[in-house]
Each structure stands twice: as C-alpha cells, then as structure tokens.
Length: 297
Length: 219
Image (tube, rainbow over all chains, first blue to last red; front, side):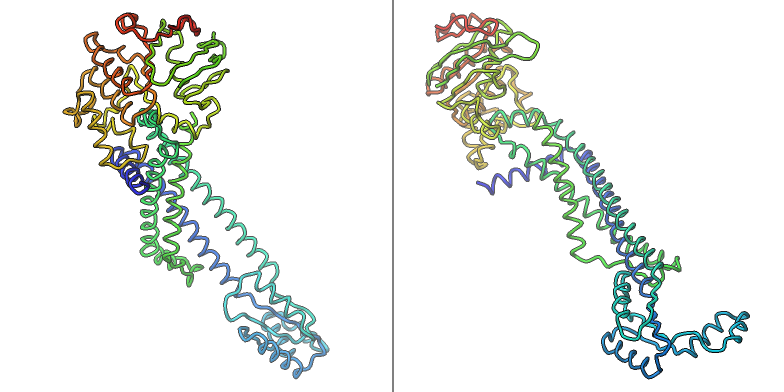
C-alpha cells in the first residue's frame, strides 16, 4: 500500500510541475541562482583561507638567544629543534652575520655602527615551517620554541598574524552571513511560489480534506514538488560552479599577482552531493512553509 | 447514531447560528433537515463533519465525541461520512471516474481497486458510460450524481447532503433523491438539508425544522 501511495503522490507532484511550468521554472531558477552564489561564496572562502594560510606560512619565527650563548651551544640548540620538528627549516644567524645583515639593511647609515665598541646583537635561530601553517599554528610554534633553554626572546610578527587572523575571522563571519541571507531569500521565494501553486489548487485541497485526506497526504505532493525543484535548481548551480572553475578561474588567478599559485579548491563528489542536498532541503522547507500556512488557514 | 447535546454555534458579534440544539438520529435513519435560509441547516451539517466546531455543547457520532477530536483524527472521521453539496464540488480537470475515485485514493487503495469500485458506483448512479468525461461536459443533474457516487464510493455510514437538488430542475430532483433513498435502504444514515418544503410533503420521512438556530419541529 505504501509503495503505490508513494508512487501516486510522486506522479502527482511531477504532473503538477508539468501543469504549471512557469512558476516551477521561477522556483528552479531562484534556487539555482541562490545556490550558485552560495557555493561560490563557500569556494571563495576556501580559496581565501588557502591564501591566508600561505601568507601565514611566509612568517618565520626568530629565536633570539642569550648574548652569552656560544656558537657550539647555538648549533646544539639548532640540532635539537630540527630533531624535534623535522618539518621546520632552521638557520643559525651568529652575531657577526646579524651585524653584517644590519649593515646591509642600513645601507648609507651603516657608518653609525662603526662607533660601537662591541657587537650588541644576539645570535639567533630563524625557524620557518616547511609546509603552510595557519596563523594559530605559527603562534603555537612560537610559544613552544620560546620554552627552549637559552632562548631570550621570540619574534614571530605577532601584529601581522593578528591582522591575518582577524581578516580570516571576518571572512568567515561575512561568508556565513551572506550564505544564510542568500539561502533565506531563496527559501522565501520558493515558499511564495509554492504558496501560489497551493492557492491555485485550493479546490482540490478542499475536496481532498473533505474525503478524509490527512494533512500529510495533502502536503506530500507539494513537498515532493519543492524537493524536485530544489534538486533541479541545485544541479544547475553545480553545473554553473563547475563551468566557472573550469573556464573562468584559471584566467582570473593568472590576472592577479597576489593570487598566483593559489588554486581554487577541487570540487569533490561530496561537494556536489552537499549542494544537491542543500537544494532539496531549501525546496522542501520552502514548500513546507507554504503548505503549513495554507493548512493552518 | 448521531447525538447533539445543547449545541451552540455563534460567531463574535452575531446572533447564534445554532442555539441549544439537542437531537438524536438513529443509525440507518433518513432525516430531512429543513428551515428557511439562515436557519442553521448547513452549519449543523458542517459541525457533523468537523468543518466547524461548536461554541458549546457536545456532539457524538457513532458513540465518539467529535468535539474533542484532535485535528489528526478529523480525516478518519470524514472517511465514514459522505458529503454532497449544492454546487457539487467536482474537480474540473479530472474525469468523472477520477473524481469519484478521489475518496478512495486517500484510503491508499490500489489504482485497479479505485477504478473498479468507482465504475461500480458510477454504474449505480447510471453514469458508467460517462466515466471518461470531464464534469463540465455533464448536465447539473449528472454532476450531482457524480458527487453522490463520490460520497458513497467508500461506503460511509453517514451521508450528509446540503441542498443536493437546489441547483437542479424539478424534473431531476426525483432521480437524485432516489439515489439517496437507495443509499439509505442499504443501511446508510442520510441527512438531507433542504428548504424545499414540497420534498417533505412528497416524501414522508422524519423532519427536523430549524428556525433562527433552534429546533422548532421534530417529527
């Protein structure tokens, strides 16, 4: 019994879509547009996160050692760091090299250093992660390395990392807000479109209820209709995202120097399924809202 | 069996549509419900199939207090009640047999069973040959016969008819009423609301008369 009732309701939902192609098309296109924008936001966020991570990875951690540290002690410390964390690149900068670098950086003003009776600069270890680390990872690394014996001070470009983190946080909040706004708008449009369809079939609904149809039975074809519209809309959006990724993004990333080397995240079957699922949920929920309001009245 | 105890129905700001109505209708009875327009006939029928709820009082249908029925229970009550309206309430975009079968669809019957039982009912009302027609192509009398077939297709224990002959030529009235008498003869309790007093004199059945929402005659 359940099978043929389900089949009958599905058939009716498909027939309803077929009988009112224009409102259905409006719903499908709205869902499609909303999901396309939403998916683009999400993918944009992934790409922005990758970009921020790559910027964060450029920041190295400098460990300033006690001035009394000997070359031998400093190299011992270097070995210790490398042994503990093979994914770090560590360069020892002795006091002489540090002074030489300072002279180079000062350029014409380097003469001011000639008056110094002794080299005031401490030896240091420059630690760079081999693979990209998010800002939080760099901060944690700095805290760990700061615990090592002989380390007097740690510099990891804290202000820069704080700004990066704030930027990433802002992007996340903005992205989530924009995504919900777009999906919410799609939901309302779908609800309104389905409500028109429900209103157009009010006589049918009245008779259905008169002959003993439950609210669930009345609701089911509309829900299926909404879910179907959502799925078709999501499939269109997915096609749009794939097309943009394949043909538009490669050119765009080449056009901007700062984005060079940054790749848009690959679309996996899971991403596609999530998008289709989101479409079905938006369509289903929109229909539910429309029919619930009608059944209440 | 149908019982009403001190039933009142009033809308805010208006005089009560039904006022302290108490009556009892036995299983298998045929009852005329009469009175002038606005007497409360349609409202009383609506209360019986839960399209309205009383302001006060209790209504028992088959021993069940339908005033206390939850929203979820109403469809199941309606599956035992066939309703016929003056304006037929047929779906214009469905064929005659589909209109009749609608009442069986919600019960979860198979397509074959729906068709078989619908055709059988259409045969009983003399319209089997019009099964594939759309309602608009039928006369008023034929449309009302389709509506009666739909109301009876799932063999309800109660049949409510609200002015079933109100839109029909006098010549068609007898044939429509005969279908209701036939249903009653098969054991269905039938309540027919009408303001046409000639029917009451032609067909002597129990008559309940309402005036200004009160029962003024019951015999």
